[in-house]
Amino acid sequence: MPKKGYKQTEAHRKNNSIALQGRIAHNKNLTLEEEYGVDKAKEIKVLISQRTKEAMNNLDVKKRCGWSKELTKETSEGVRNSSNARKGLIPHNKNLTLEEEYGVVKAKEIKQKISKKCKEAFENDPSLYEKCSIARKGKPSPMKDQQHTPEGRENIKKGMANRDPKDRERWVESLSGANNANYRGGISYLPYGFKFDSKLKKKIRERDGNICQLCFMTNEEHKKKFKDSLHSHHIDYDKQNCEKNNLITLCNVCNGKVNKDRKHWTNYFQILLSVIDEQDYLEELYAYY
Image (cartoon, rainbow, N blue to C red; front, side, top):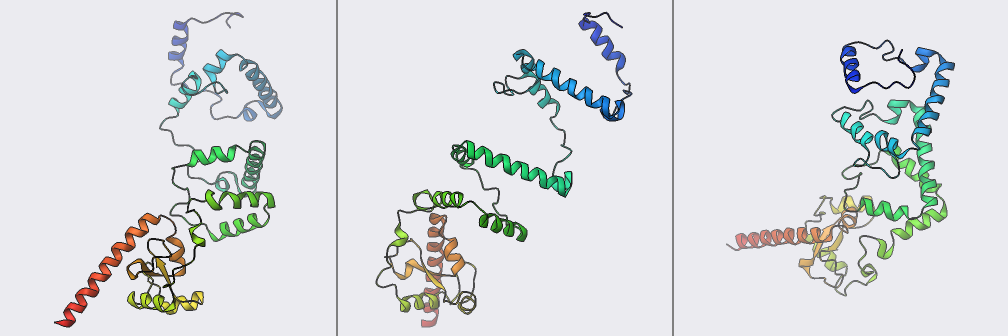
């Protein structure tokens, strides 16, 4: 045994490392409990925790060993080395849900703890709402091209029903008026043009074959499902512009769908109508000759 206070030289360390290469440690894959017993393992863990806290009070030790408020991957040698060592390794819990990794009961406890911590964080710091909004800006939604499961929908309904009225009011305000991405200065409250009557709507439906021009739902199917005829949509979203080349037939669902990405849908329907007009012209031409 080396004397107390003795420090090995760099050459001595290298020689020890070479000598130990290829050997299997006697305690490999053993937990502290398996190696020392439950009571002794508990004492060792407490001792490790105490010494770690004492050591981490030293800024130099922090830089070599791990994270702190003042450190990043660029300034922490220990974190950088740990990150490089784990590159290319596949995490043991990759693609596993909490239920698959910990079991249903334990997963439920973990989710409740996460939910509680998040609520406390947002209550203590209201600016987090704005910070999260800025962080997500420009990024695609995690639910893009996906749908909630029936169980998920039921959970959302229950959550909304049990939601604090103040939270609900704040949520509604955040999506109302100028805060909404689809807000256009309140033009939805403007009245329709004088020409936009039942006769004009019928003519538009007949021109489009009494079919929704997006999902191809027929007028009969629409009446059975929604108790109403197919809608006539204003292509340029101007309610006063009731010309035939600015109206197209849509069902109730598609009429709501096209309120988003308005530039895209305006161009799409204008091109679609130009094709329909060309077909009508050719049919009339062939009938004449």
